Image (cartoon, rainbow, N blue to C red; front, side):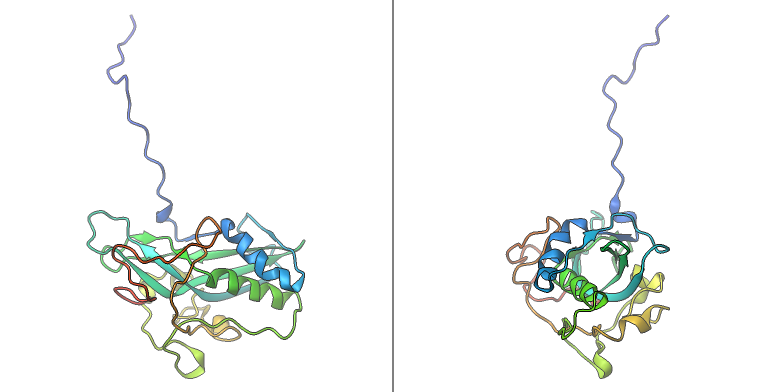
Length: 222
């Protein structure tokens, strides 16, 4: 006797929430990095596997990004950060990648993945050029509120930063703080988002919209 199907139209299983991971890589921004390497006649490929035991170079620094809290029960809409932790790695065979650490919402503590602006491509390209021996480079500096030594005076909530938890954030007091404090200047000089490099690797227009202002400011700094 055949058992009747009591649920002929089962609901599809929910897709995994990528926002639950503590970091991500952004291969769609490789084109933007390549464009910034072209003036030095450098061609590198994106290393899709995150490996810490086969790389030839490694550097921790900070970039800028915008976060959205996707928790519908949370009153917070999102925030911007000038201190998004990132680990840049170079591998044999002219390959590289960059691990970008996520941050937590101050209100509900849910993890959020950032939407990155042009500082990602500029920082990554600068570091790759340094490793490839390019001389006479002007280091990229972003953001406001520079204190002594080029570090930002804005408070950094380390307990909300996955880079700090991993000891990779130069804005916190973790094990990786020293590396990012030199060479590129973790403190950042404020500017408008006049066209950002988005997740599709292209240049968008302004990002003003519901809940967002035109300046790199948000409900809190991270």
